[in-house]
Length: 301
Image (cartoon, rainbow, N blue to C red; front, side, top):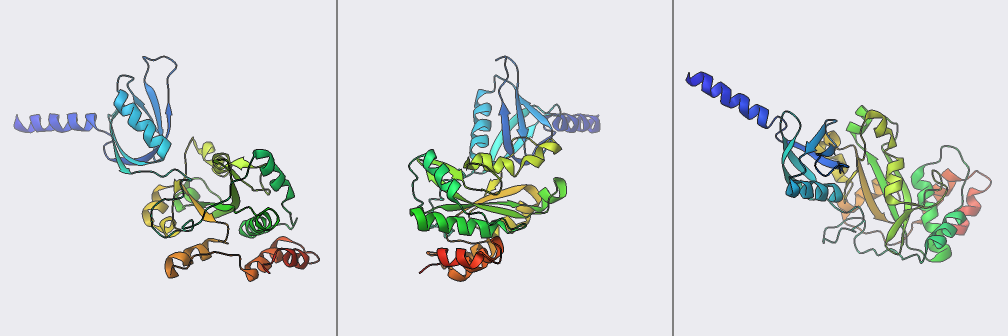
């Protein structure tokens, strides 16, 4: 009798919290058309659609906050995928809060320029020189474009990087492990200047969606890449196995992930463009009869 009682208790516990301890990110909280219907919740680490009763107002608020701040949470749900509770494991970052802590990172002590209007952003975008050389590297294009905006208009831009993890490559596929482009501040709205892949400046969120769109074919909608401060976070095992991608923001002076990693190793901040990098970038992006002319124009005097 005692064994039967224990078995029933165990079964009841399993039914009550079939998804106990699921650590993930909230990708989308879907509001029902009818206020009496349940909310649907999509998460990053499980293709299951979870639900929340409309009466659970506090839990719904917590889920929406976790979605907005891209926080890591631990969920508990019943066997029927009804969410019971949420615990924040790691408070998320706004992708562009510039990391106000004192930690050393690629935005430390750097303040980007404010561009007066979207029209000005479009003008800057249209002026960016394209090399036309097939298979040029994204970090070389980004470096030349950042230098051009700085030299011709005095615009202190940023760089935005998306890194793809081991999990992304296994479950989604793809040949790149990162992509980078310049980004500017237009009165508090951030626009990515990626002339290779877009026809106009696009917001940071729109740009991220372009490079995570393949996830939708696998049934993963609304996922947001985890924001990292330093590139070492990208290489961590937990990140590689649990996240699909990362977003990192740097000053315009950083060239590519290897030089970004050196900041953590030697603590030296980048405060200017380096001519040999500009030379290498021009040689990669432009054809042999024009790269020297471009480098001569952009090099630091």
